[in-house]
Image 1 (cartoon, rainbow, N blue to C red):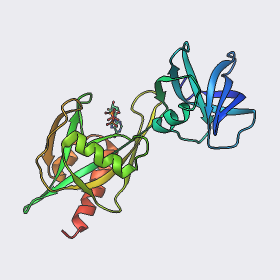
Image 2 (cartoon, protein in one colour):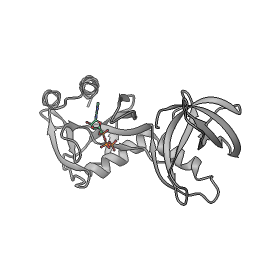
Image 3 (cartoon, rainbow, N blue to C red):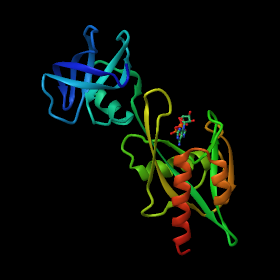
Length: 231
Ligand code: ATP
């Protein structure tokens, strides 16, 4: 159902940008849904399922639909759906995911090391990151996630913001925003529930250990920025 194109027929305005509706896919019957949008919408329009939600006391899962091109991440969908009267959200699965994280570097007198982590459900080296929460800026998410996963307090290098986009599974579309983050100690305390292991490596080793193309591109960008930074 997620990412399906649907025909939407509105039947009630619940609050700003939140409507109850019926939706149908090609040939299927009508199904109850909620519409979230930042746009003005007509009573009938073509939409896309941006999330699938389960609510306490309501049988089955309901599609959450928007207009094409609008991107909604989980915190905003939760906030908007909290406006439903007497209906409490139990579980939501979203089409768009957003995480933020950091390429953490530590300069010694001799060289610069960067931190790679292997998380518990993956078998590949990458950078600390995690999902954005309600009310956070991208930078705040990155700093919080780095602290939670590694115990490090970092300073973000102004001007560095790199985006990695991929599909973690199925039709889900994920955007990860990475900042360049300077650490002032290499004393890492990993969060064992999330992180399996960590390693400080120089940039050449990092290129060998990381396998995803978008990670490699970001390492290259980080290398250039670190080279040209004065101290
Ligand atoms: P988060 O740290 O944001 O909470 P997560 O640990 O839940 O994320 P990801 O690290 O995004 O999940 O990994 C989910 C899936 O996406 C894994 O199967 C992984 O192999 C794949 N993946 C991770 N990074 C990339 C990438 N840069 N390019 C393509 N696929 C990736």
